[in-house]
Length: 375
Ligand code: SAH
Image 1 (cartoon, rainbow, N blue to C red):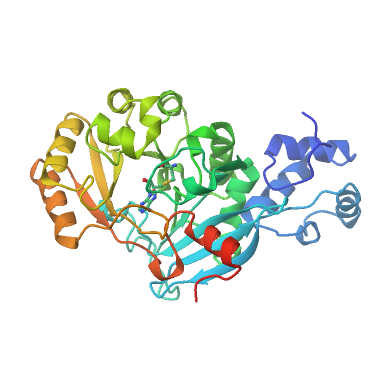
Image 2 (image 1 turned 45 degrees about the vertical axis):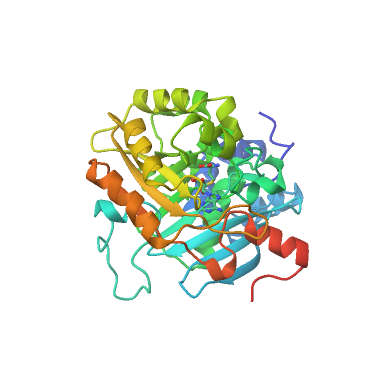
């Protein structure tokens, strides 16, 4: 392990922080002190790590170590309470992170979160943070704006987990963090940055103290990684972006279906080792007159037969460059009704923050191309 090659503290494991302390001639327990300060207290600068003696902080700064959390570059607040952040990374690249108070993050229907640790002081009872895993994305889904950016690079584990710390700091969320849900559904394909994504999960669990059972990762369908993910001892819940009810349609909408077909994907879903009471989530973006008919709903029922699953239906969040329309409300409800009458739990996801360009990748594009954000 080369510690001198990097100088971001945020993202280092307890083991790495301990090695750094020893390298500086400090006792090993300084590693734990840094770990707690970085992840539990979310110290944003070395000088705020009060538990460290001044001489060690000076040593760290002298060796060009910094905490290096993503920086809030722009922030847009929606009328519905959603706050969308453009986070600047150390190399000047940026990604989107979204804060959704009383969030539509996937769990409210389970009845496990609402009111649990209700505070009469907080303006929100629980919130969901949507995190990015890559700058841009290489999976060329035809209805997604992030796809238009292409992929620039993977985020590091520190940059993935750091989005959460930066948002919690900005929202002034105090410990403990039981009211926070995380969804890895922002920019990028987490399963194409699998190792950093899983490292980030561990930092979020062990460092920030957010339970893995409160996290959901969404994949476009990277089948080999679905197998790997099932073997992880600590893991978030799994969501799969289905988005089509047959092979031809899915290949048209999600070209990666040529590599990992619907059949293989559903095989992996069937084999996935679910825990007691756990369900897989299938996400289905409804595109007007493309994949939203009664026939498509019936095909979806057949596909999911025998899988312990629920379906989240999302009407397309439209974007200027997307060649698709958003279906009418009745169409969405008719699709949902067919799934429900077949015994598949199906939920309609509210679009969040439409007024602040909430479709994936839309904010980054809007800001970068025009220099201005939403009004
Ligand atoms: N790459 C991962 C996670 C990021 S996309 C994945 O594909 O799952 C997160 C979700 O947003 C996916 O279910 C995707 O299908 C959906 N999505 C993408 N573009 C959208 C749009 N314009 N409107 C609504 N949902 C969209």
